[in-house]
Amino acid sequence: MEQPIISDPIAYEKIPTKIYKDPKEASRAVAHEIADLIKQKQKEGKNCVLGLATGSSPKTVYAELIRLHREEGLSFKNVISFNLDEYYPMEPDAIQSYWRFMREQLFNHVDIPKENYFIPDGTLPPNRIAEYCVEYERKIDNLGGLDFQLLGIGGNGHIGFNEPGSLINSKTRLMMLDHSTRAAATMDFSGELTKVPKKAITMGVSKILAAKRVVLLAWGERKAPVIADAVEGSVTEHNPASYLQTHSNAMFVVDEAAASGLKRMKTPWLVEDVEWTSKMVKKAVTNLALTLDKPILKLTNKDYNDNGLSDLLARHGQAYEINIDVFNQLQNTITGWPGGKPNADDTNRPERALPAKKRCIIFSPHPDDDIISMGGTFQRLVDQGHEVHIGYQTSGNIAVADDEALRFIDFVVDYNKQFGISSPEAEKIFEKASKFLKEGKVNEVDIPEVRYVKGLIRQGEAKNTCRFVGIPVENAHFMNLPFYETGTVQKKPLAEEDILTTMELIEKIKPHQIYAAGDLADPHGTHKVCLDAVMEAVRRLAHKNFMKDCWVWLYRGAWAEWDIHEIEMAVPMSPDQVLQKRFGIFKHQSQKDGVVFQGTDSREFWQRAEERNSATAGLYNKLGLAEYEAMEAFVRWKF
View (cartoon, rainbow, N blue to C red):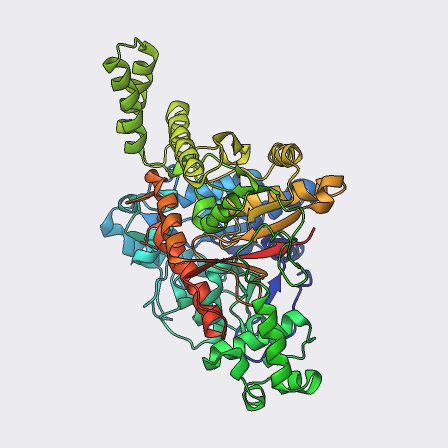
């Protein structure tokens, strides 16, 4: 496998873990390991027996394997594969079927014989499942077992569909799915929990552990807690991935975000020598203060020495001086002037004083991310006289419930009747949409008429928010990036057209500030693609004169916040400003009360945002700084 960014063995880790900069780099390394194994077996005249996984994590591995087949002649004719699981019941041609997933993601693009791949059968009658599961394992055993098992990991630690509570000796079987697993899968089932199967056939833990080699993949911040627990915690049925600690040839392959909970990432000074840069000192001291529940200015030499920071004292002096330096760094991040304070000394402020009136673009991946994630800052920029534009990067149309679309179409028809407007075309659209919505299958792609109406609903809500905050509606730019417009949760990769559209808006506005969503909790999600589009556009425009005076600030979404040591600008909010932000979020009525794709978090978006902003302010207060009602936080990206 290729060299990861961090590869030293770490005493705290009970499973070998390799951390890569991003999923693409990690996936390439794993795909090449699989390819080398296939080729070695070919030389030996043997079959290569693979255990394969579904879900978002292995997609990039399969994409690289396809490339190796097409461009470098990797043959799969000696490969025999067994998939981990399948929903039950599930037809093989259904959109959510893992049969369909594997054909579309891998099998249809390589030369593996059709009789050489096996996936659990989701159409079996209940009385045949037990016998089928025994035979599934027997097939693997008759081939000498699995040479390589690829795994993903669920948010609750499940491997395959071995949910928490599964025993280490569990066999292939029918499994009841945990509520959190079903909630996480709603995106594949039109956002409705009731449509997600309650059961699945899964390969057992014992058969997974019998594989000669096991590699588990994990991408994104949402997997960080469960990865840390599996790698550094105890072997327990509460986190089935922890069973891999008992395997002699298992490895976790993760990106930096998924690794962020590991001690070598979270508190690296406890496991290795570190370079005590200003950023590392800030990270260590804030961590120490929060761990001990003490304000920074009350930390003592003994606190440092007792908690693995004696080296920091030796290199940088007494606790008193270090405390003051870090306290001042944090103090200097706080500003009520996110666009810069005119006629003020900006030496220690996060933003420049000049130009006093700035042109700003807030890039919003969905039509409500601007108000949810940085609504207080948005309002401050407007109130302080800056020229604010919003780039709504996608339509957000898949996150509108069918009944909402039908209600709006019905309104148009009734409106026309009420005012005597003859519009047979509107009535035809209503009839067509109504018929589709009543008869459509689970996760069937919306017809164009329905998709357009859903997009209009979200566009109208975004305009309403702009009016509420106080910017002209013409400053709202609906970009409708093409990568998003598939009508399904599965999006297209970032394309040239998406980048050019983003560049066009930046060149048109010539901003002094760009705000973009840096929430990478799901690296395969819309936020990640939208951020990639902004970053690539900025890189290409960096040589332009107007970009030499442009700063890029990254905000986070409603689910997570920057770690306290990362924050470079914190914009405080009063109780009244928090309430005003809440009312701005309420303008997005289609996203309230049973929103589509809610996931495992039952809170409404305004609740998530307020709790996150309150928690950020609470951290500053715990560290000994002023107490505010709430704070929005930003990190500057230097291009």
